[in-house]
Length: 546
Image 1 (cartoon, helix red, strand yellow):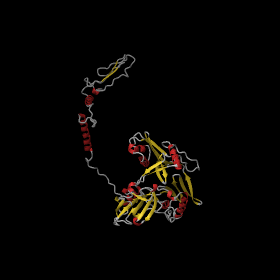
Image 2 (cartoon, rainbow, N blue to C red):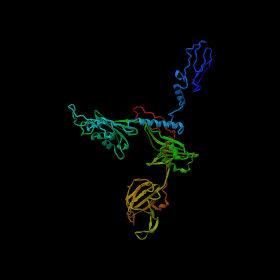
Image 3 (cartoon, one colour):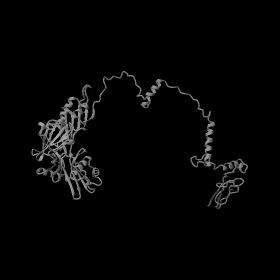
Image 4 (cartoon, one colour):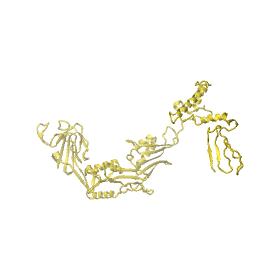
């Protein structure tokens, strides 16, 4: 069966509409005017198959002069006319101008139909509230403080309200005090409000555990102050706790017998931190990128520079740093000084270990040879005014052998020891005025005369560059200057022909201890140490691993 539908607008004099063509036995075909006459042939009846006239149907619209037909013709003419197109599309086209005209017509109609044109409509005006109403509304409203917000209405006290004799206090106050630079433990507690009696007791208890000078600036002290019977007295100290050392925590608590001290040891692993790597384009940047602290890298560069020029280090060289480290069981990590400085470049290898000799830290090679130390070029900042040998004495007026050299310098300029030694004499010495004499290794000595003040005492050890006095004009002198002498086996020699260079050498038991220390550091693996293993209860501080 085939079903067809066709629309013929204005095709005939009566404006016929669509007709159905059912090509099947027993079905009717459309008539000329569009209707389907009934037929009884076939299995279908005429009742369900009646066509509906779409245009020109009905008795009054059969001809072209009917009212319904005229309306249909008018509606069909403007069926595709859109009076409200999208004004955002096709701007400037005919449809767009038609939509704009529609918008203008609607706006004009709204203005013409409005009462009074565009004039406002009069309405009732509410009366302004009085001051009492405004105050009540402000008290109950939520507004910014800048707009005059209030904290709420207040009620007058009734007979049930009893006035307080004094403001109540908090029963317990918990606070934290910090020991500042140039401050002390006792002053920090006093600022926190600890009373004199408790302060004296706590200071005595803490002093028995650690010296007061060992508490470093920046230490945080947790304090809890209890209830006091009267505002005129200080609050009693209920508890106090702080980290006294990296491996010790101290706690003070109040019990039935008063304040008591509890020591809480903290296990510490002192395995050094070893950092190695390739130099690359920059030794400093490579060491810093590997995790070495800036201060340790600077010390490393100064130590290596005593054995080779830093500019000679190639990009393929490998650096090796070992730094002192402490790791507490509580998680804190503290890095110390540089212990070992190593560098390998091809067949050349530098191994330097920090070792203490006569109270001074020096860098020693793996063989036990220390640093090569020289003397200062001049003991004072000034120019040479007189040399060694015969000369006309400026005061005595005749030729006299000058046993040293003179340096002109302003009054009060510091005078430095040219090398390490020990003070053999410090005081007044005839024409030398205030005089200091130092004894050095190898039978050498040095003298400093005409000083205005002396900064050392006899028997005191001095280091190279240490201030031993100040320029003056005491004794036989025409003005402020320094007379400098050098002695060998007690005889004055020309200072310009003497070198105070010295090299420390380790031997015997000290050399064996040095090599054992070096072997222990070389056994440390590069990188971060393994996970911290907590010490068993009651074992106290951790054991150093080297």
